[in-house]
Image 1 (cartoon, rainbow, N blue to C red):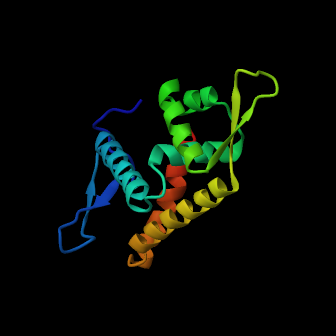
Image 2: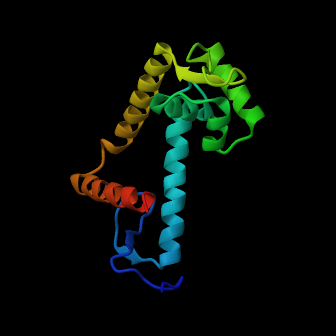
Length: 164
């Protein structure tokens, strides 16, 4: 059983000042580490989404990514994205207007439409991902080899945490 004041083994982070990136490590409680990781991940995610591209809005990018895997109905997308049907209808309409998504009649249910990516939609996804990777690469290119190694290990750990 873990308590908020438990100190996980190896749970240290560098203390930093505005002039240095690394100093002596400080020990964090489990709760402190969880809060710092959550906030850092949220900030990076937000910055990547909003600063790396202005081609489509973040919610539109999410829909394009979903449709890349498999065509869906607007209702299915709304459920996956956890938004209301009217909200998804507006998002899809914008993507259709941009020529990134196409609508086709559902062969099994004439009341439904199936949404899929157009070639422009696929190209747009690749471009956005390239911009996002470029944005991140720009930020990590000046890190030391040790800092890059830490990020590499942290990336694998965070992936494991996300998949639990």
